[in-house]
Image (cartoon, rainbow, N blue to C red; front, side, top):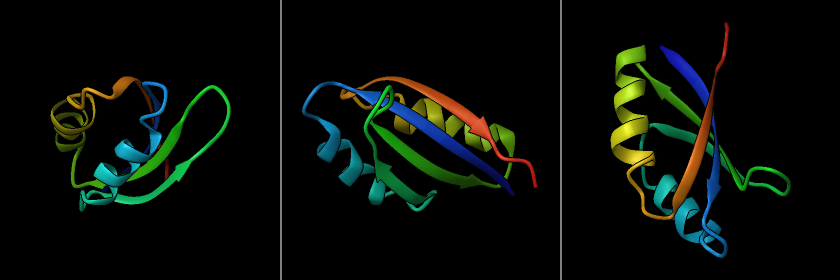
Amino acid sequence: MVTAYVLLIVKPGEESTVAEKLKQMKEVKDISVVYGEYDIVAKVEKESMEELQNFLIKKIRAMDEVERTSTMIALK
């Protein structure tokens, strides 16, 4: 299992929209809308690095409201 924290910068005013979309994804285990450089922090779990990469590219980065992401892989 791969656990990652995905930091998202979204278009202004779209925080709630993106947060709701993320909450519907089974891979997203926790989500927080935050203040500062990033707008949202999401905890994501996938079975492999390849699956994580595909999820990030095809689901999260594909959202029109998402401007940029940064991913931190958690060590266990």
